[in-house]
Length: 112
Length: 112
Image (cartoon, rainbow over all chains, first blue to last red; front, side):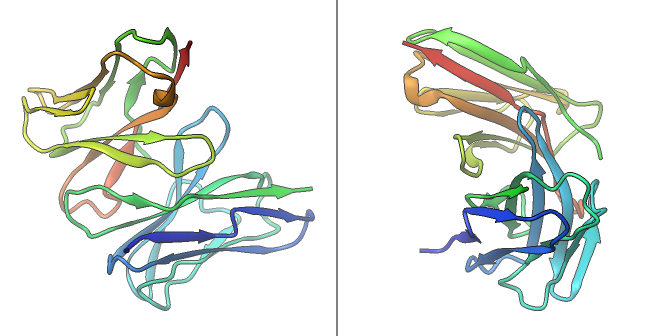
């Protein structure tokens, strides 16, 4: 079955360390997205990519970095420059048509 | 980035009651979508609306695409405990690089 997989589900890191969140899709979707979700808040766009080897900053890109070397993969690195990295991170993909996004099941990052 | 105005922010209802929530925007959209997010998971698409005035049902869920293309509502009839979650509206325009614009979510709690 096609889908989008985020790993790991839970991640703990010490303050000051970089950490990379994985996002893989086998839906053959061109576009991929990373969102951050804090308790009681909506979805805030971090980065998005419409095509391999190209990506754009979203609304809260500071302290994050991404790469898009393969169509299937869009990893997100949370760097030590991110002031409040503890959050729920969601990856999504889209075929680029008017059918919305398919979301992964999320990664909960806790920085201690 | 632009956010849709989604209301109410939260709802506490008795099992069996009907629920209504809505989204409004200052901009028009070609597509309106409604997602449900259960705790610790990614959002899942419930209903997609493609034409102004369209009324679409999915089981106990009914959604409408506003005639002005600037609003949409979602109704849930005869609520049950598994309806608990966060409901997000989203607007989408073809050709928009960032594609979806999300509402801030409605947290639904169903009391037995």
